Length: 272
Ligand code: SF4
Image (tube, rainbow, N blue to C red; front, side, top):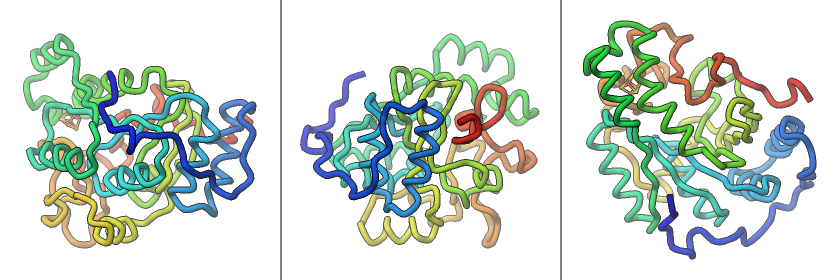
């Protein structure tokens, strides 16, 4: 899918961070570990520039228009690194999310590519489990996420050498075990989380200060926003992702996008 972004927003990097650059001849797992270490003292724009320098192939940023993804859109464009902007339209998103998608494109003058579920697979899923079958159990929910999210993500990342995400450590206990940079063995690419160490209030301050477009649902207690039927507002003091798949145990609340097919994470340095 061609990028429609204006060249002024998608040009080559204009500067490189003043840090030691890891050689690009390392194995992907070693490179992930080197980048993870190098990321630590850097700000997010410097991390993006370093990533762009270290990864010779295409970079893809996947956004779901959450607060951190909006901040990252802003920072990627500020860094002027070359990367594709991609989102997964599951067919069950909030109208506010679609409106923010359009507003973000207008605000920055970019195109954010939409990836959609395979029609035949979606029809088979709904025939098998009903339109809201994901409420009936974890297996049914994972089947829905597999068709509406995981398979489209695989197409979106096809051919990519690096995957940029807005994952943060303080989003959940599961995510605290992730890294700045890891090697996604199943997908064969480096996965970088430039805002991994940023708490939510720091993200919110950047979004407010820099007038980054954001989802109005955040003002109504929706801290983490996914598909409409699988997201509820959280009460003050509840964990950020408590409103996602609220009927499930905390430990099962990933949707397959950020786990390998066997449900494990491949931590950078684990097999260096
Ligand atoms: S979040 Fe809910 S509606 Fe969206 S893909 Fe997963 S189970 Fe389906």
